[in-house]
Image (cartoon, rainbow, N blue to C red; front, side, top):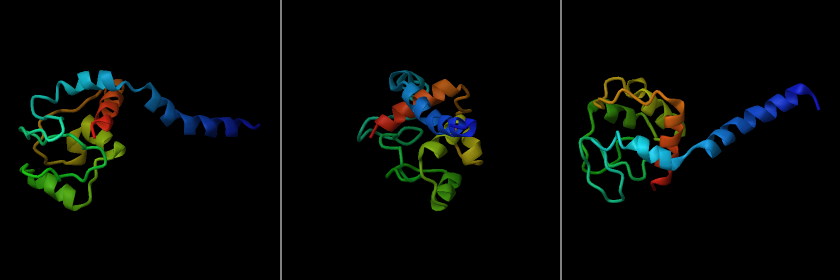
Length: 125
């Protein structure tokens, strides 16, 4: 087999290995810094931020009863969906996705913590 075939297989396997290496329990601990503003239990209340139960693959700005910023409403109207790519970008740097949004959190800069947090959020649905 040629070297480029091995390299292609490695590129395909890398995201799978990353997902397998993620630790939702560690992600729950990372989520503790989010609890000041968000709840994540099914049917839970909104706080300063919306309840995050079922956020994975949900349209942005879709939690009933939560008053979103104008910028988040614009992003939602533009079709923003909280899939892995958008959540990863938003949680790493919220202003990168919603530049004039009201979320004061600077972002999760540690890739391992971000991977774990995403694994935890994906389970909460």
